[in-house]
Length: 284
Image 1 (cartoon, rainbow, N blue to C red):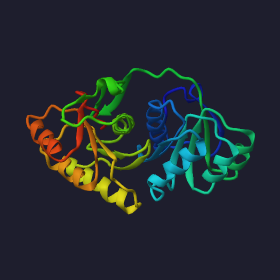
Image 2 (tube, rainbow, N blue to C red; image 1 turned 90 degrees about the vertical axis):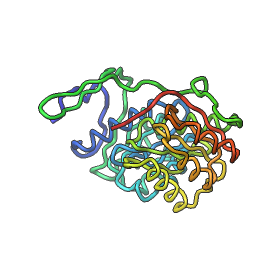
Image 3 (cartoon, rainbow, N blue to C red; image 1 turned 135 degrees about the horizontal axis):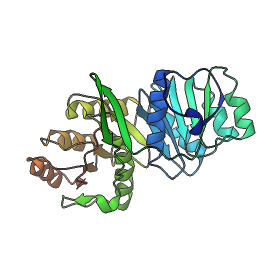
Image 4 (spheres, rainbow, N blue to C red; image 1 turned 90 degrees about the horizontal axis):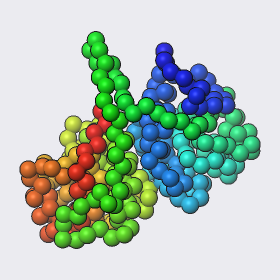
């Protein structure tokens, strides 16, 4: 049972009854997409982004988002911050997915997307969301402020001799937006405004990194020049060492470990740039 005003947030245009799990994924999707202003498409599965890309054209944003993990995309939740056009709808329609969220749809795109009777089609309205999060725990409720911090270049403090290039700064910000909305422990790998791979919900940060690298290689991404975002600091230098050997050229992390110097020294010795933000983004 959902206790809220769904109709004040969405216009539902088509599809089956929205389930408990659908609502959780939809909530995760709109919170993630709220970080992006450029034309962006994202695919979520189990509350985590498995594909995301920002591109000048919506069709390219969709294709590059799907390329991030076309296997996990099956049965996922799609979201974009631009009107869905006919060309993009024709490509989207090739995939089985649970729901799509957009600010608008062209008449031609709706005809295509409505071909599947159970497919949920939602228009996201302009909405002000509460600044608090509530979660049931034991026989009570936890309440905390939402994580509303988005780290931009001004929040990034270089800690290595090598400073990120302009392009790396863009990718670091892009990756860190995704890591903020991905379940901890998490590592996000990105390149050219595209999510290459992520390791999500792992009990070890190294496991999250290894998962991300393996996934990126499985889908034949070149990690040379990619960036890495972590939602918490590295307690040892092993993560930056593994990342550097895979081709990662720049790293963003909160910093704050008593052994930060170990990671900084490794980066300095292997021509990797790293920035600290001072902000931990833990999604649990």
